[in-house]
Length: 458
Image 1 (cartoon, rainbow, N blue to C red):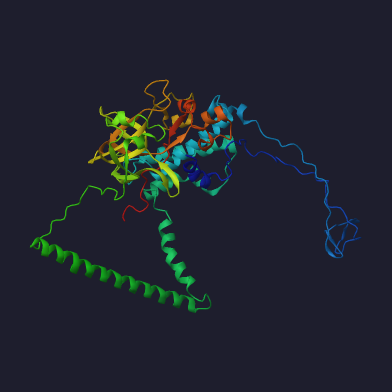
Image 2 (image 1 turned 180 degrees about the vertical axis):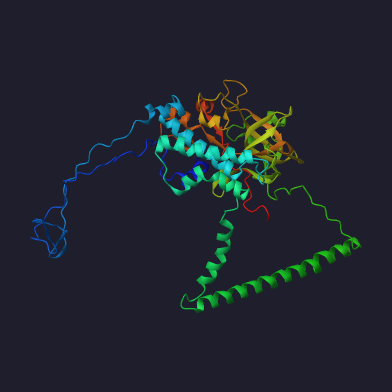
C-alpha cells in the first residue's frame, strides 16, 4: 500500500514524512550568530578591508583558503504542539498524531485515485456535480488536512490542485486534456536520432531528418512484407483447407492453458506447509496423481463494473527469483464472495483434466475503532480456522470458473508492530500456529486495477 500512497504524495507534498508532524513555523534550528570562523596562524588575511574601522574577514589567508573549526551551539528545536490545536481537534478529534498522518495519506491516495479514475466503471465522462465534488475535496484536502499537519503548502502543484482544478475540469471537460505523457513518449525517438548525430553545427537537423526518413522507410517495408506474408500465407492456407473463399473468424474466449506442469502425488503435495488436509479435501488417496501448474490466466470480473481483462494468478515458489502466491476473490458453492490465498493450481487429478485451485481461506475481521484504512474502503481480514485449536487455516477447493479477480493484500502493520515491535516485518516473523491465529491483513483499496485512459480516442 505504501507505493500507492507515495505515488500521489510525492507530486503534491514532497516535504511530508510519515511520523513527523507540525507546520514549519519559525526557525526550528537557529545557529549561534556569535560563532564565526577564527583567524588561524597564517597572520593577517589578504583581501580584507575595513568598514568604520572594523576589519572585514573574507576567510582567505596568504596561501589561499584558511579556516579553522569552531564550536557551534545549537538551541533545542521548537516543535509546535498541533495535537492540542482547535483545528486538529475539529478534523481528527482524539486521534493520535501517527494515526492522523496515516489518515492524511489515505485521503491523499483516495483523491489521487479519483483524479486518475481508479476502480470505477465510467472513466470517460464526468458530470458537473462530480467535477464540483472533486474540486471541493481537493481544496479541502490542501487547506485543511495538509495545512494543520505540515503547514501551508506554497507550491505550484498544491495551489493549482486547491484553487484551479474546477476551472480546468469545466474548461476542458476531462482530466487528460493537459496530459504530456504522449508527447514525452513521442519525444523519445527524437532523442535517439539526436544521439546518432555528431551534435555539432547546423547539420544536426539535417542528420535527424535523414534518420527519421530512413526509419519510416524501413518500418513501411517491414509492414508491407508482413501484410504480404499474411495474405499470401495464412489466407491461402485457409482457402485450400476449407475449399471456399469465405472464412468465418470468431473470437475465441477460451484462454490457453499452461504448457508446463509438474506431476506429483497427493501425498507429496500434502507435505507442503498447511496442506495436510489436501487428501480429505479432494477425497482421494495419497497415491493419486495430480498435475500442478505455477500460474493460470483467466478473464477477471470487477465488482465496480469495468470491462473484463485477462489476469494471471500465480502459485509458485520461484517467480523471477522470489516466491509468488496471489490472493484472489472467488465465489463459493452458495454464491458468496470470499477471499483466499493461492496455494496450489491443479490441471489434472487422477489422470483426468480437472482445473481448480486450492486456497487458504480468509474471513472478515472486526475493524479497529476510527481506522482510516477501513474508512477508505480497505477490509480487515484474518485466517479462517475450521476449529479454534487448529494449527493451520482451512483450505478450500475452487474451480477456475469461480475465480473473480486478483486482490492486493498487505499485513496489518500496526497490529504486527504492537505484538513484535517497530522493526517487525512479515518476513522476519516466525510462522508458528500462534502467529497464524494472531495475524491480521488489509485489502488494498487504493491499488489501481483499472484506471482512466489518458488518450480515450486511441
